[in-house]
Image (cartoon, rainbow, N blue to C red; front, side, top):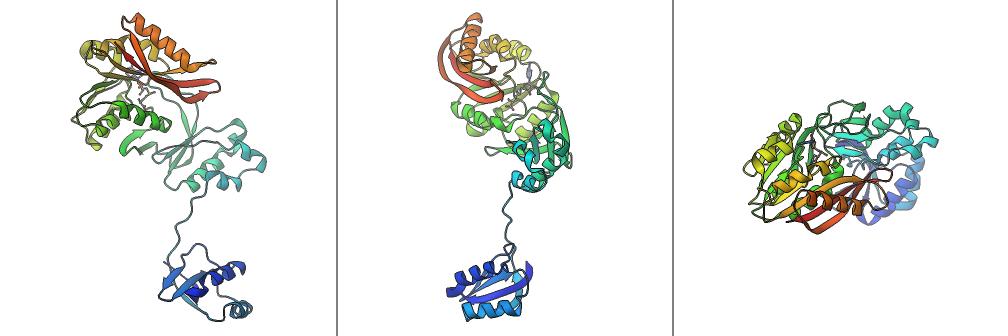
Length: 355
Ligand SMILES: C[S@@+](CC[C@H](N)C(=O)[O-])C[C@H]1O[C@@H](n2cnc3c(N)ncnc32)[C@H](O)[C@@H]1O
C-alpha cells in the first residue's frame, strides 16, 4: 500500500476523470485505481495546483481531492531490449542478443564482439527485465568434451550457477557449469515422452539431469527407464531430481559409459532408446541396436548435420549404421530439423522403428 493524493469521482465520471488526470500529467500509473461504492479513487502523482483544481472543476463539476492508501500495480515487465536501449549506444542496439536462454534463475546469452565493452550493461538489462533471474552468464566457449559442457563468464548478478528449472511440470536442479542442459530442447523432451507407451522399457543413453527420463516417468504409470550418463555431476543431480519428481520407482540412474553399461547388463531389454548425443550418436548406433529387444523397437536418433539436405543425410547415415549393426530400419516414423546450431549446421532428429 502507498499513500497518495486521490481524485474521488462518481463512477459515471470515471473515464472522463482518468483521461483528464492523464492529460494533466497527474495520473499515478504505478498505483491501482480503487473502487468504493458509487465512487472511484484515481491516484495522483502529487497534490493538484489550484489552477488544475479549477480545470477539473470546469470539466467534472463533482469531485473531491484527498489523501488515501492505494495498492501498487504489478509492474509490467520491461523487455531486456527496451531496458538496454537506455544503456547502450543506439548504433549497437541491433546487436543486442536475439535469444536469451533462461534456466531457472540463470540467464545465458551470447555476446557478439561489438558488445564486448558493454556486456555488463547487457547483463544488467536482463536482470532488470527478468525479475526471477539472479545470474547472467555469457557463453565463453563452444560446447565441448565428453560431458558436453561450455565455459561461461558471469556478466551480471550473483554468479550462482546452481538453480532449479521447471519444464512440463517437472523440476530439475542443476548447475549450468557442471552439467549439460538446454531449455531449447523442451519441445523435444515432450515430443519423445508423448510417444512412449504403457509397459515400455526405455533406455536414455545420454540422460543428463533427466529431462527425457523423468518426464517419461511422470507421464506414464507402467514404464521403466534406465537413465545413463558418464558425468558424475549429471548423475548426482539426476538422482536428486528423480526424488524431487517422485519417480524413484520408474527411473534407474546409472553412472558410466552407455556402451559399456548396455553391453554389460542391458542387452535386448529396451522397447525404445533415446540417443541425445548429437555430436557422436552415430558411433553408438551399434550398441543402441544391441539394447533393442529382438522383436524390435524405436530409436530416437539426434545428430548434427550440414549440407543442403540435413534431414535426409541423418536418415541415410542412421539407416547405414543400423544395417551395419545387423538390424533393419523398418520405418522412419518422423524426421526433422530441431534447431540451427551454427550457420548452416542443424541438430536433426530421426525417430526410427527397427527390427
Ligand atoms: C547433449 S547432452 C544431453 C543431456 C540430456 N539428454 C538433455 O536433453 O538435457 C549429452 C549427455 O551425454 C553424456 N555422455 C557423453 N558421452 C557419454 C557416454 N559415452 N555414455 C553416457 N553418457 C555420455 C554427457 O555427459 C551429457 O550429459
